[in-house]
Length: 478
Ligand code: A5A
Image (cartoon, rainbow, N blue to C red):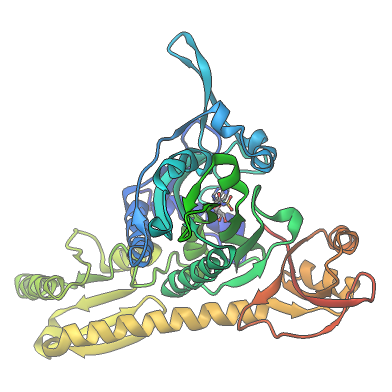
């Protein structure tokens, strides 16, 4: 990478910072010549690998991974009326094989309900097959018309995790919705990303769903990013695709379904929430490298120091850490800068004086220095890495807490949103009032039934009409 590109924009100028960090830290290259399609650099792809491994580990507890085709025949795609309405403007169509027009147009999946459910109709037979919980991690295509942004709004979503479950009853499906929310919370807690969980208003639910619960994060500029959604599909798709099972009494019943998805927006949130003016800060759990060793070699002590550094590298690698020994011929200061930009949580500086004292200097990515004993280095590194995790989590929680603001009126809400806050207001659930709130503030109703430790359960009157309201999140969303 170009090392002479000048200083990184300050994180205060979030949009500029975000665009720069993506290429400087080698996460995404945005120069691919198709709008909304971006390329993963190996360094960024390694972050993706660790993030998605955590997601897989969580799902694999009681889901099974599978893989369905990318292409969906038009007649399947067009079966569920609400679903079509929601997606028809966003679908890419394959119309030719070579120069021959296809008899049946094929959709590039924008999501996979209509690819998966015709097969579920064949697979689900009896109550003994239920619950069925499968997921896949695939690319999906959406012809987005809002401004595209790397990792945030893509036309090819490269890392779309979608789970699709079938249950015997509506209640069991709704319990699965709760389970999926617990799972997503655990996932994001592992990434030190605080979440706001709420029920989307009816007009904003997934096309074809009974209801949608969304997970949002507050980005550094106060905008919200939807980083996951869980949908109760009831029997809307099972009726269309004829997914039936024989119950215990020998009767045919329609399955009750859920689906839930997460994309590389999880990585956009990870980068944005933790980074600082110097660059990325990666939580150790998903850091491409957790520790970098920088040898400080002067004159005739060069070999001594290098030998000790190699030994340290071997020892930490054997203990299971992701470690790099940076032995490039560069000034130590330039190496510090390089690895700070790339978010490595812990740097070990080893010089002749440290070596003589049996020590190594540990500097964490948030600026804390401690001299640790070479004899206890694995325990100390492990402790220092968990300290960073705790510090990142606390910092992100403080950010979330300080960006949530109760607003007792439309005018106060507008002021708070303009200051980059997310509003907690009372709303009566009527569309009429929602329109008023959204128009007055140029923001969106994110959801009600807010489940968040950061949002108190208050009662009050709707800021639109004065009738009884429910706590509701209002934000400027990506
Ligand atoms: N089948 C269900 C799971 C589904 O498609 N749900 S969804 O449309 O809400 O998408 C799931 C998640 O993918 C969203 O919550 C959002 O975090 C992410 N997502 C949606 N469109 C995206 C896009 N164009 N670019 C990046 N991520 C996107």
